[in-house]
Amino acid sequence: MKELEDYLVEAVGNIRNDRKLATQLLEDVAKYIGGSEERHKDVGVVAAKYMETLQRSNEQLVKIVGLMEKANRGSEGLSEEDKDDLFDFIESEKDKDKEENK
Image 1: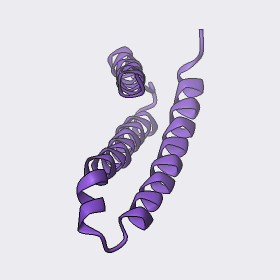
Image 2: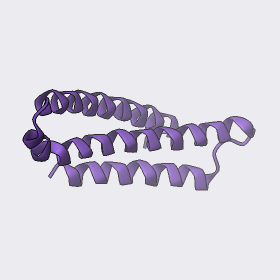
Image 3: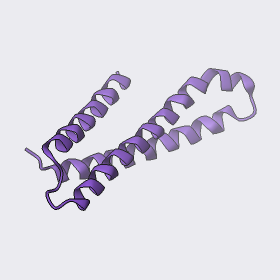
C-alpha cells in the first residue's frame, strides 16, 4: 500500500493536470463564444463545469496544505484521523471525477 506522501504527490499531480486541462478547455470555450450571445447560451453550462473543476482543485490544494502545515507544527505528524480524512477526501474526488466522466 502506498504511503501517505505518495498519495499527496499523486493528488497534487492530478490537481495540476486537472487545472491545466480545465484552463485550456475554458480558453477554448471563451474563444468559441466570442461575441455571439447565442453561442454563450449553448456552451455556458460547459464553461461553468470547467470553472467548477478549477474551484474544486483549489479546495483540494487548500486541504492538502492545511494537513501538511498541521504535520509540520507537531512532532508526531499526521494523526490517524487526519490520514483517514485525507485518504477519504482523495477517494471521494476520484469518485466525483469518475461520475462526471461517464
